[in-house]
Structure formats: C-alpha cells, structure tokens
Image 1 (tube, one colour):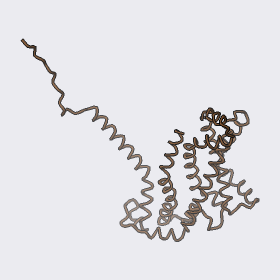
Image 2 (cartoon, rainbow, N blue to C red; image 1 turned 180 degrees about the horizontal axis):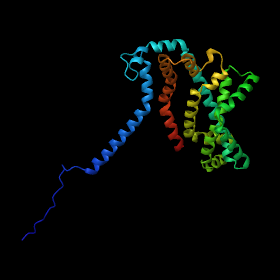
Image 3 (cartoon, rainbow, N blue to C red; image 1 turned 60 degrees about the horizontal axis):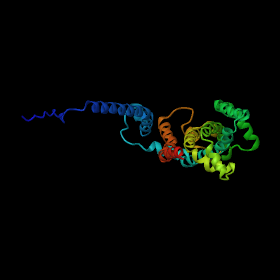
Image 4 (cartoon, rainbow, N blue to C red; image 1 turned 90 degrees about the vertical axis):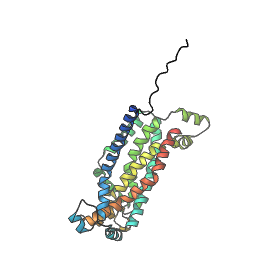
Length: 293
C-alpha cells in the first residue's frame, strides 16, 4: 500500500493581516495628530491673513467668518503709507550683515576658547554665557550713550554693530560646545601636513561647523528681523527705518485699526517666511553635510 501524503491546508489569501491593519491604523492616527497640531499652530497666521482681506464693516459684523471677497484696499493703503520696499531692504541688509559678523567672529573666538583648556578660557566662556542672561533693557541706555558720544546714532553701521555685539555671546556659546566635540586628531593631522593655525581653522574646523551655523543663523535672523527696540532707539531717518518700525509707525499706538493692523502684520512677516521657504533646503543640506564632513 502506498502511503498517502497529507498536505496541510494553505492559509486563505483573503484572511486579513491584523498586524498590518493595526500598524496602518497607528500610522494614520499619528499623521492625523501631527496635522492637527500643525493646523493649530498655523491658525493665528490663517486668521491674520483672513482678516487682512476684510473691510471694516465685515470685521465688525463677522469677525470670525471668511471674507466675502478679497479686498485689496487694505494692502494698497499699507504699501503706499509704509515705505514698504525700502524698509524691507533695510531690514534685509542689517540682518544679513549681522549674521555674517556674528558667524565669523563667533567661530574665530570660540575656536581657541574650546581648545585652550585653562581657567582663563573657562572664565571667558562663563562671562559670555552671562551675556545671554542679561535682560535687553539693561543694555539700552549704555549703548545709546556710547553710540551718541562716538557718532554712530542714525547709521546702519551703528545698528549692525549693536546687534552683532548683543548676539555674539550666543554665537560663542554655540560654537564653543560644538568645537570641543570635534576630535583633535583632525587638527593634529593637518598640522603634520604643514598647516598653520589659521589654515587648520579655515580648512578643517570651518567646514564642520555647518550644522551649528545653520541653527545659529536661524536664531539670529529671527531675533534681528523682529527686533523693534534698538532700530527705534538708534535710527531716526525715515529712509533708514526697518520693516518693524515701519509697521509700528503705520499702525500707531493711539488705537488699533484692524484694517491697518492685519495687513501690516502680514507684510512685516512675509519676507521672513519667504526666506525660510527659500533657504530651508540649503539649511537642511548644510546640517547633514556637516556631519559627513
């Protein structure tokens, strides 16, 4: 008699894969929560843009509803009264100049502080860290008096110098901790090849600073662009005003007119949002490239 082979029943292809279903369900819930959080974060921006297209009557009758039509009169009034293009160029020039000075001066100052481990270098780093904790209003009067005495009031250079000095402790603090984590063997190998200290910094250390430079530049850009106090204190010529001062002067401080407030707020933040959108990939590319180098 021939032995009969018993084959086990094959699993039906129609049976659902419960593990896969649970995994997809968790992924869908996570994506939904992320989208909800993003929407909540963007809600004030959406409301600001929505209100900027309303007339005074629409705002009074339906402050939370959508505009019946896109009313561009608010923006036309704001653009004609603010000197918008000039103020944006002023803010852009000041911000870029401050970032360049802070990045280069901060990196060059942090390099010896990170490599020379003694009491003096640690004391300097602690003093720089204390500069981060100093309230901004404490430095207003000294900066104004010093700049008045040396003739730097109402000048681009004075504003740039003030911002660079105020943001330099942040740069030194960022770069010192980052450079200290870089293996010193890279520098020793470069010195064996005949590199000077400057060549070691420029060709070995500087390319590795891309991640922290990207982060630092974002912080400095936001703080300088949105600052109102120091440009308002140091600048008086209307052709030199930054965009935030232009918004402040256009809106006024005696009363709040929504038809002025919301379009001015959109115009004031629009260049910063555009810079984020344009340089986002480069910032991320620099962050990832720095780790590889």
